[in-house]
Image 1 (cartoon, rainbow, N blue to C red):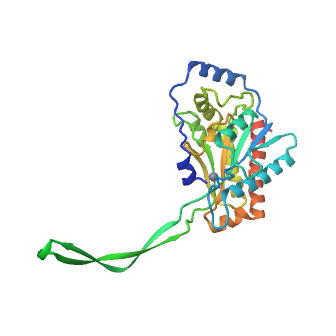
Image 2 (cartoon, helix red, strand yellow):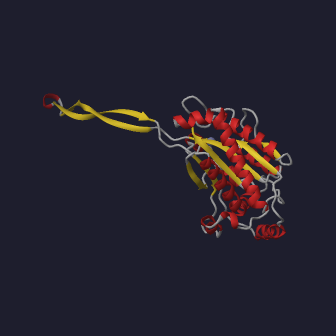
Image 3 (cartoon, helix red, strand yellow):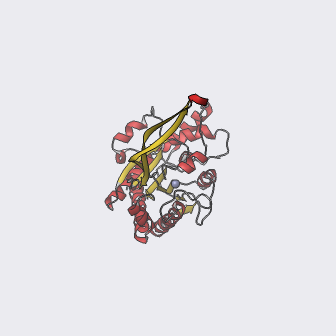
Length: 307
Ligand SMILES: [Zn+2]
């Protein structure tokens, strides 16, 4: 979920970049010049949450279960359509790998794409309705001077209704606003030359990790944005309501920044919206969502491999 209050407040992850060393710049640019033609070898499928971390709660279901069901269906479709591809899962059961573990796993396996599956949630809407007056009694003075006062104050009844927010949205890690890649977003995504993503496997425990993470964000922004756009387009083609591609650089989805590959986080619908929740829990819905993301990978593959 995007409005992951419970998760976000719990996980206080912040990345602060104090400096980028000259050495890092040199290594970054030497990698850049060595980049070869893009191709997909390994895709990391990440089912959000799991275990004690249930994610968002709906009326009758939990986010972690939907994430896993969709992730497994998506992975199965990927394996079937691209048998030459290595499809790896951060979890295949109801367990909770820490976000760092997930990123570590993706990096160690030299993933070419990191696709995280989540479910969104929105808080209930509070309504206050005037319900007459009540009498409030107060006293002033002491002893013989003690006086009683009464006054009427309005009374309200409070009720909550479901939040109407629904539909899908796909997140990518926000690029530096000053970065020239920003221009790329408003231009034609498909026509740009895209870098390779496979030749560099970092150690996430490296003390220079934070600096590297910033470079990765910039480096993989174009591809992440491309894939995210294709996912949302695919949802729209199935008749879903798309809230679009969004950039985010807050805690909660830092796993996207911690992966040295194009990475997206798909919010497949709102668990707090009755129709969405039913759809997310239905076999039909899960199949369609898995197919939508598969279609996006299909098109991404074509676009990045120039076929
Ligand atoms: Zn989530």
